[in-house]
Length: 276
Image 1: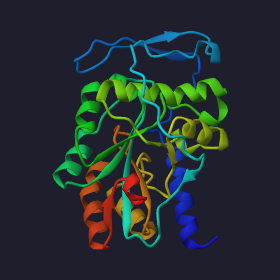
Image 2 (image 1 turned 90 degrees about the vertical axis):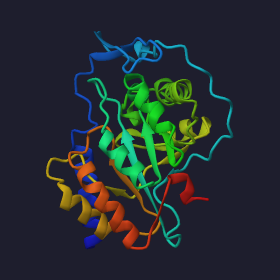
Image 3 (image 1 turned 30 degrees about the horizontal axis):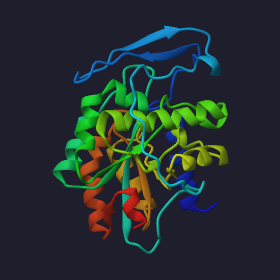
């Protein structure tokens, strides 16, 4: 294994082991939601029950049906064209068992620098933070993606739950923000043919990425985040970070990361713009 592969493996590993998006192991707890429109927060109630696929809870919200879209080929996309000179910054807004969080500093930095980015919304994240979701969706150079409803391990759930994890998130995002995602990122980057097929049937391209920053890890300080990107980035890279405060030093490192990538000659774009 060469040095590049070792470094990449390390960052993938710490991303998966980090606590930023990982749910507690207690599978007896599940969510139910109540929502009043135009409130800053939606009350999230926690019910204790024996979890099963049969009682996988639907959102308690009247959802708008998403207009039909063209079915996508069930493929997993790791990166764009290696000769494009483009790099995509992506940020996961993960749903968590606790009320979901928002790192507003990350958004402010991107907006101040007018830097395009793709932000993957968790369905519960949107229900927890509708005002923040609407704000992010209003930024014209932000692309909004789908990051599943409850941030589950989608390769291990039933076909019905898998489908609804993605469908409900599409409908939640459309209901709350008016935007319809065209890209999907599976939680933990856990993916297989069932997952890509379910996403494709809903008109979504499955986007993983080739450069996880590892920002949730407690040892991933500002300099480590910057250097990790400096030594791994390539033309067409899809960089993975977090905007739910899962990243401990994401906002601190982000201005330098943006400047670094521009100085290296890369054009910063959304994921979909990688393939234009």
